[in-house]
Image 1 (cartoon, one colour):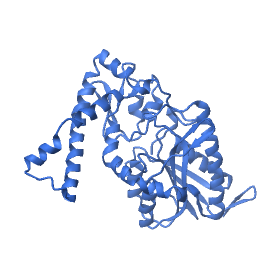
Image 2: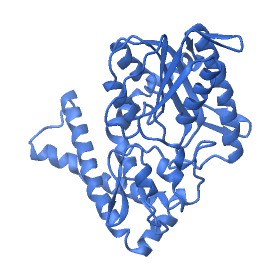
Image 3: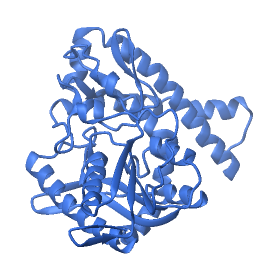
Image 4: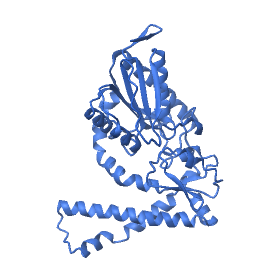
Length: 361
């Protein structure tokens, strides 16, 4: 048992595994570690980005293991889910901390939604023998600038300051009592479960569409910082331009760190693509080709949905390849740039975070 300034912790050490796109989860992990040090605990942070193998925790006395990650599509970031699924079996106490997209309008603070971001990692770890001793859905400033304007500096500061105080209070309860669950985990659970269908749809389909919504405008100076710093290794060069692969998790790091602010979300490409696809009678053609009748059965409904998403996938692959090729033509590139909302919206990195703040495993 460790003590510091009269405070006592039931834990001797804290091991934090974190994944962070724009720094929200990283800041949460750093603040958690800061409070642990105040209690005389040994704190270790492990970044899991671009991981090739899982780093087993170093168990020293009574060790608490924390997993800190952002919420993507009402679920844990896919990279973190993959890491947790490969994590070795154990019996240690575990904390699950997921950052949600918080917003502020005037003096009103709006929370994000976890969906399955807490529940799935908990299930994986429980099956591996771990004991869930803490849960904190954590509303950092929303970084999803592909979908909404970036927050003002004052709003970002206000939200971050509130969250830092929150995590310190939460950590004190957890370290002193060995157990702490935020009220948010219970209050929002009915809503989190209700959005589960969206979670599943996003994980298997939606995230691949978002992956094909990014491009580099004509302002790109070929610094390749986005390629070098992508936490999922999802960017490559095609025709001497950044090209987003399907492993992209839309973590927003590339948009946030781009020095020339040349990375945009191609709203004027994705929306027309989806509209054009809706005009193509793929499903009806496949059903007719196979001689099936539309009897409204469950199996046929599943089959139709699978055909639909496969068709969307193929259509998007072909369309994005063509899109990437024609971007070499400057006036076309400029057209998409000036019709992309992100050109006019603020970018986001968590307070105190820069491109060099992110570390690989």
